[in-house]
Amino acid sequence: MKLYIYEHCPFCTRVLMLRGLKQLDIPVQVIPENDVETPTRLVGRKVVPILQKDDGSFMPESMDIVRHLDATFPPPVLVATLDPAIDAWCKRASDTIYRLCVPRFTRGNFAELATPDAREAYVARETRAFGDLDSLTARTPALLDELAPLLTELEGLVRSPGSSVGESDFQLYPLLRSLSIVNGLRFGPKVTAYYDAVGAACGLEDFSAQAM
Figure 1 (tube, one colour):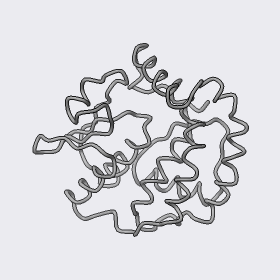
Figure 2: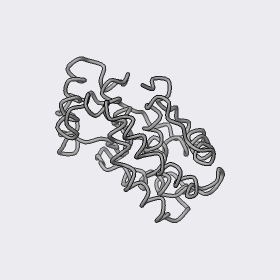
Figure 3: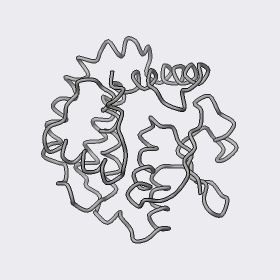
Figure 4: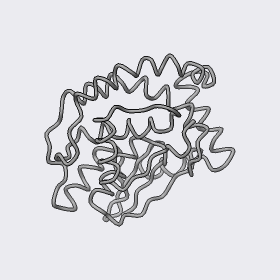
């Protein structure tokens, strides 16, 4: 087995969470952002994450990979039911979160952006999706104001540390991990406790060392 990922990608964080929770010895390969050929050859389009299964076939789609690995390596960890309130929160907050994080990701220290051509390809892709990234960075104070009430709301939604893991955690934690690249952003005490517990259980570092 092998996982193909981008280091910054929140969808890739999902499969890394499962890998860490189960302590699976699955090699990880980072695909350069400007490498279109590899993922297209494996699954027919430029996408990550990709799982190379033990039968030599390839699987895209983060939650499909999470469910497959959870079933392949028992006992299962996805035992909690979906939390509709958390899922709804993620849908409402994701646009603001991406607008805060994406301009910073394009300037970050990630293996998929290790060459000038790779970084240029990523900047071009995200500019097509979000518009001028410098202008978006300039909107940081307004975006933080948008996010603040959502984070306050999340204080009343997160599960306590030590609760059973469910698919909603694979929606929420990657978004919170992405926010660690935003300098000065702080979570409330309950979200902080949840975030720290999940990160420790998964063995994942966040992006706070390069927050900007």
